[in-house]
Length: 186
Image 1: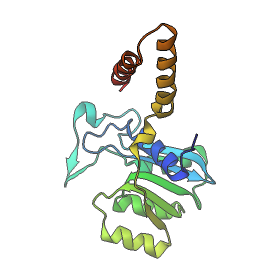
Image 2: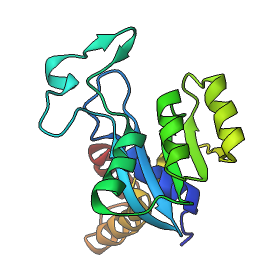
Image 3: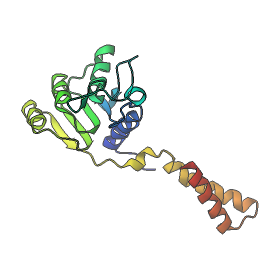
Image 4: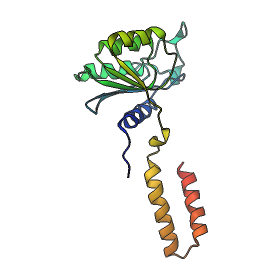
């Protein structure tokens, strides 16, 4: 069995975290990593205990939802809250950081940012990352890694064929059964 690459592993974590987002406009997730260890994660949403956009609508001013705390900021604040250093850490984020998050990332001492999707990449953010020596790397994220059942699907296919053979079901019928099961799982 081939192991998942580190960049795909951490980016998968960010995509999984984004599923907790309460933003109705864009679901974003971020994972902070140091020495190949996850130290924090964040998604975009409201303050703890506050109204969520998904339930009360976005609070948009000048084209931006001011109710939302961005994923990158939530991850950095989680480190601050629980005393985890972000100095020389890496950040994996589903979308390119906004200008305000760019400044926070730089000030937090994060030295490398991996992002999966371009999103309103601000030229000044690119300039600031360059000035600060923060390395940027776009990661083409393979969303199939989120389907944890990929490995299990192979095993299940084998088990269905073996069980079908034990009870004398024709191989073609066993294949149809496997496909039906797979459909229902997906």
